[in-house]
Length: 572
Ligand code: FES
Image: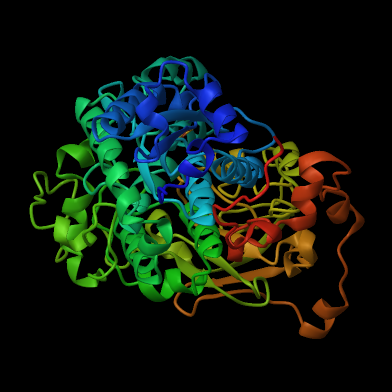
């Protein structure tokens, strides 16, 4: 009897095997059902409503050719995709639903392994969470970034430059007409955002974890080498079935540590923190949010990409790519965890070379000395909060200022541009009700736009504090993922406008200077609690009832851990 999982469906003389084979023939040869050719799902998050993933069908064909060439049976499996810029109320609300749908479909179907096609922000994390829970051999093919935009002779990075240009409009430095004329210059090709936003970060981090053929992540979406890599991934997944090379054998605690080093060296998105913690939770790894600081804080920023730097993803690829950057920090990488290639990541670094030192800096003279994500604690964030120093104004990382508090993003939008707003450049903007439960879905709103009257005075950064997330393409001195969130009993709900807040990066503290006895007696205002979400039906209700804090990945409590691939019952 074949060892293949799919053989359990197809091999035999009984009625069930007959039904499974008969309905699947549709042009497949009889050899597809004899139990010696692995059936490989190509989990495809493409959709017309996921613009960054629209081209994944083309990649799926290359994967498919590779699988067939290596003796496997390729089977395209459309799975839930999320268009970051489109879905309401926020794409993060749906990441766990997408991961759950994928997990269930990987388990339910007669497959031996899965190729994961993602791109836009939440798609690669959801695919990895699902694959980790099911435990079948899996390989990621990232959809790749779009080519650089250009506007008025300068590179235009998607996301980052939207924030910059819109602040210029609000500050009176750019006309609305000029702003709109940049729109068609921003998205010039297929692919995901070309800054070091969440999609770029998660593609590279998937490679750092070992789940992508080394050297493939970051290949621009229109580059024919991406299709070549997709073909190679198809061939490789067939071998991985024989080797039973599952995510459990690849994404170990050592691989997680390598991902944290990589995250700092590339100046990756803060969103990688919640995604990596959620993936780790599926695998039962002994890791925590503090590991990002412990492992990554002293790692230098080497990659000069927006939003922390200047260039865009196709520049990184041209300059030598992710592996060339990793070679600079090779001594910080654990040499033991193997990748989907069957070999450790470090063994793939020997050939890597840097071709442009303005894109990939040296270890001796990095873009920034200490670039990792810092984890803060204090009476405002007893469960932790994070800040990305690489994207912040250094002088603001030690700061003391009066809080200006907003109960929701709508409250913020209503008041932020009021000419009589009591705010100055030392104020600390506080936005609550934006955590996983409070919004719900933990939206990317922490990088609050600055008050118009300060923009007009030339102010371009302020300390901002929020229990939500910020876009990976955003920048600024933003303390985010404050845990516990305001809607989950967090002290952020008790802060009042006028309280003095102290941000002390050096000592990793975030505190409000209120007499502890007085603070202990405070309760949230009615307006504060009224802003918290209270869904009564559907996915939003399930989500709010079960989502875990940002500091553990904002997964659903009943999805943490693994389900495995075995399904014993069948209804025929
Ligand atoms: Fe899809 Fe940025 S909106 S990657």
